[in-house]
Amino acid sequence: MKILLIENHPHFSKAIIKEFLHTHDVVVAPSVAAAKLRTAECDFDLFMSDYDLDDGKGDEFVRYLRGTGCVKPIIAISSHAKGNTAIVNAGANAACPKMEFRKINTVITSLNQQ
Image (cartoon, rainbow, N blue to C red; front, side, top):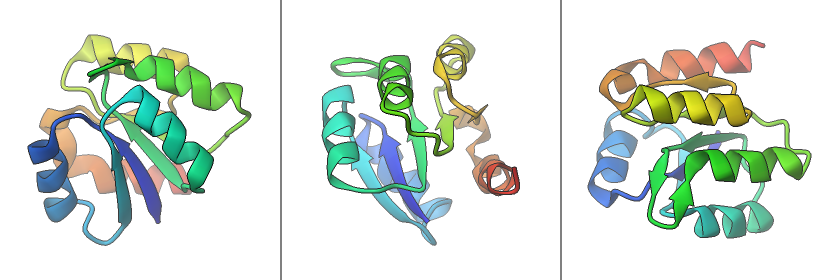
């Protein structure tokens, strides 16, 4: 599965890819602008977005993506409930808080079965 991970903390990105997402093809975008560019270049199967990014908020990217007509699954991955709620309200399909990231593959599987 090709995943776009929108996350601006490189140590977190590397750790979760190594621990939980190593069987997937993961591309990291550290900002809203970078994520928008990546969506124009590549076709992803799944998107995961943090809320607090260097140049904006994750819900901004989700609204942008949904506005393009993209219906691919999106998972909110903020460490804060407020951020996950905002991303889900913007159009994400699910949330998996960072403190519960050990459950990410279960969330991915459940989205693929819908």
